[in-house]
Length: 164
Image (cartoon, rainbow, N blue to C red; front, side, top):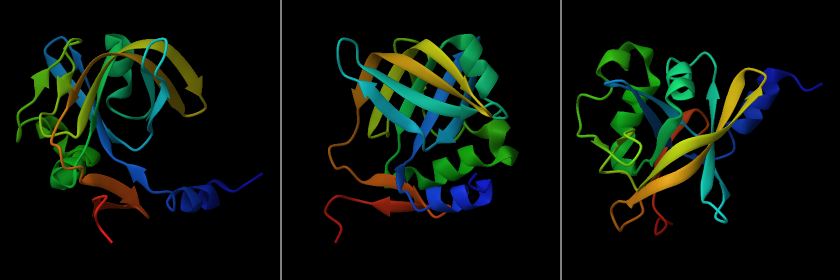
């Protein structure tokens, strides 16, 4: 069996896009930074998945609300990603920028490269995490220039397709 520390070191070498996954429960927004957002299929119904640790403060809210919005971050959202990744900012995560509800009511970030508003169709527990599969109910594309925020080797990095 592979040691979990070695596995984590190996996964840190896999560059990943950064998203803020949000939900709304009553009037209370919840959210977390995720690098585990992926498309599932485009047909017959566009769907994507997100893997969320059961220890995440947003896990149970996502599970109860049955909706989430995956907001794909741009390089200009690096500070926001850092805020959403640190527990000490949990109470103020949503305060420093505007959020708008889409079809499901989950908060969408207007500056995001894309916001995928999803209704959960499948919940799959896997060890310490839950895979939430969502049918995309709404999609908003942001700015035309794609300047993605990436996560690599435990740090956030700005990267645009035109960078050398």
